Length: 327
Ligand code: GDP
Ligand code: CA
Image 1 (cartoon, helix red, strand yellow):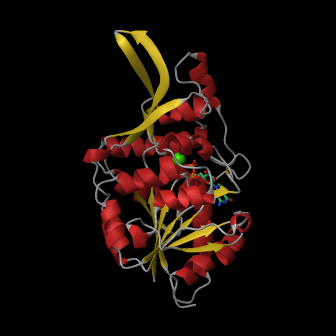
Image 2 (cartoon, protein in one colour; image 1 turned 180 degrees about the vertical axis):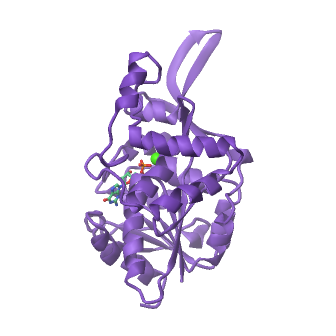
């Protein structure tokens, strides 16, 4: 049995822990492939940083900081402090010493000509995540945020910042005109992505940020078409519970693309496959029971990912039932 999961960073990582737990309970040991968003990637201090891939890799590899919610456990910050002493910008991004080692290895391999997918595989040889991690693309795609503020000048001008600057430096506090995925038109799915989708027995959308994690994966030319053509059922999990994101700031992104901050809003945004959208099934939290997505099988289960066992027992089991997979 083969399972494919579309995932962003922290929501994706936690969900994948549950999928891995669920797979580990089965005698047929399903293979799991995660297709991970790379549009948050950024180059800082000459280092290529892949925040979502690293969140997933560290979490599944047991090297993440559970309390902080991101980055490495046992992290120290000597390099960041030294950079600040030099006044070397940007100082707003938390680059830990342990984390930097990952970025050094990655940047060196990318500079030597290896594609990101090969680099990710090499990094995973250390972390053994138990899941095949594929970047959505080997090509460079970056979400930039066009700010709503208008600069007086030669006519009215708009300013754009990298997604990480908007998210981390400004805590998503500057109002947004639109998101732009720079490079997306020319991006190709990474090797194995389309093949994994076509060969899957179940496809899951993690409860990741719909706008800057899942939508960007779907926007890589070829991926949406592969999903629409996939024989497997597609089941999504809502990142919104009772009108608010569970962790993080997804509520800052949804209004920008005109989507209501609710399980129903996000479900309608992905759309039911029966009506040209993507979802055969949609999992919402029990507090959102009664949510309707015409053409899709909507089921309410507890969606708080407190631990992998619970995620496996509630969410993944229900998704597998929607897909009619053998128990
Ligand atoms: P990021 O890339 O690190 O921002 O992480 P993702 O895009 O993968 O996921 C962020 C989303 O995960 C947030 O919008 C949250 O709403 C969602 N999320 C986090 N924890 C939970 C949880 O326990 N349950 C559910 N349903 N969603 C969660
Ligand atoms: Ca992210």
